[in-house]
Image 1: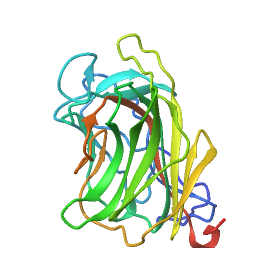
Image 2: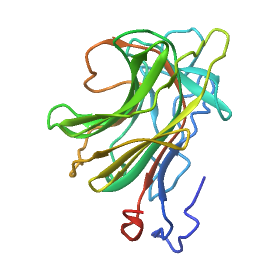
Image 3: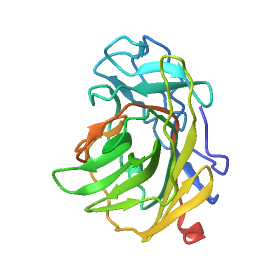
Image 4: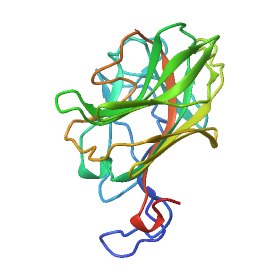
Length: 239
């Protein structure tokens, strides 16, 4: 369990440039019926593999356990039926936040999309979703949906993951939403900016590996590792 380093007392208060809200290492082994969050802030946002326990490749059911960028990872077949669901809590929609994940997409071709994290409510049009889209020539790029707006990163990277051989390239994708200031990062490098809407709150569950309302196109396979949500305190906004 990770506690905020700058916190004291029963109600943690973070004073750093970023404050961890949730961190899902996705190290679960086959048979696991929960997906651990290692941040107590102020509650554990424990996930549930759907439609059942974590599986070993290539057994149908919940997401598959595979080697990851750091330790284990979870692989999501491209059918939209296997995912991780985290019940909604107020801390999963901070006003200012950084959402990041290590991703290993399979090459699927034109029109493909790859779900990463989704907390976007199709009924209200509120929330956020991070996914990848095919960019041609075996490349993908990050996309974020914020309320009714969609923004695309400017940097592409390779889609070459092979779950059978456990080979392929892991890439860190990060999106920063600081009020109306939005930015993408790929492997720590700037990958485009945008003007973000505000008021993203909703009460639907957070999903990893699937989307509440997917974009048009082919739902492609992806492995995810080290998914994180961090809050940006007001004193560090705009930095």
